[in-house]
Length: 544
Image 1 (cartoon, rainbow, N blue to C red):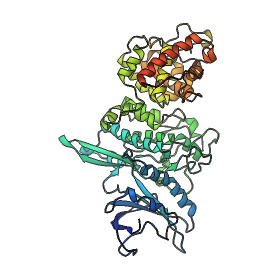
Image 2: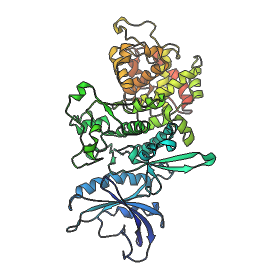
Image 3: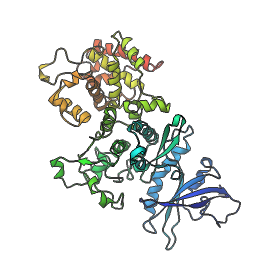
Image 4: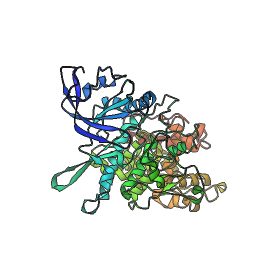
């Protein structure tokens, strides 16, 4: 890297988050002089960590980049700089290993370092990033257009799909953005044949990002209440309002999914989400606040964005069924909230956009595969509506593989006699009116209530439990919810032990070998389904 220097052009822009962004051009020089130049970013005594030494292979001489410069609040504030460095380094590492270009929907970062403190000179953190500001505009600017330039809502599926692709890349690398919103999504518009326009999105502004170290018990950088109040997740809100419980609360990748739901809502509303309070919530005084040093979004000017724990956003502006369902799922409480990869690969809202992107879902099951899996077990061919409702419900199940989908469907075929019954034939008296309904035979009032709250944020299934049997969408949604809430995390299920799923669903009757005939029937269903979903994979029947 010796002899390569970064030279500035006449571009400079200030952002409200405290960064100054320079547009710079990398040129190769043989001398060590900095005359006419901006900054030397390697082998320089002014820098402490040398992270700029590692980005030679990922950048090109003669190309333009962004250099983000942020001074510390105090001349000796190494902690602030180190925290920022630790949040960006995993992103740089992820891009370095991203050889197949799957991170096209995320702004690239190449190097980071901060200066040695000098008398009277504040410590400065420098981040080298992909140049975006000269060719992309914030999504918030695009959706605010009016008149003949107004963006049609039909494009929102593609926008959401691209954001999900970016989030999935980040989350697969255990990076949490922590501030997803339209202001932090950049868009490039491109004219195409037949006078059509295409839009390409990139997630940007990772100044608050954090690395989720699954092997560390000390993720302090995660547990900082940052971001915009109108987009922050429920768990972030609890942290900020001092309602945090270390034993159950986690700031993880699902916090970005919540913010994504708010961002989709922002697209349809064309302004940040508004929050609705019940009278009980209004009486609470634990308003959502930010970390003391975070002066984000002119905090005092956004008092309407403040909200109590438990408040719900106003989603009445969304008049598309699929989009409404997508947003509702994103806003579910953790752990019922689906992951970014699950939504990306399963949800019908992004299905059309997925086909255009040309990236087949790893965990999706086609209509033909679904039909064959049912028929091969000797049952009648399922209807189109059954498959469509199945596909809509799948994100609630938190499935992580086609194998797990096969385990789920095998149990469903057994519980519903091949998708033919959605009501228990001989209900037990102790269940009362909350006897088995739906494809998973949901029972007990408590389970009806939990499912209703998770899926619809109200008690509609408690008040009218027959919906679980009478409505195809609800029958599949409750079945998938039960799998995600109860079965998915049961020991052995993630490892593909089919017997573990039987025990999680019906341990009293079939678990631990109590009814070998029924258990054997489920296993036979599973073997045939697995041969369809994952050809060549041997089933593991243990776990019961």
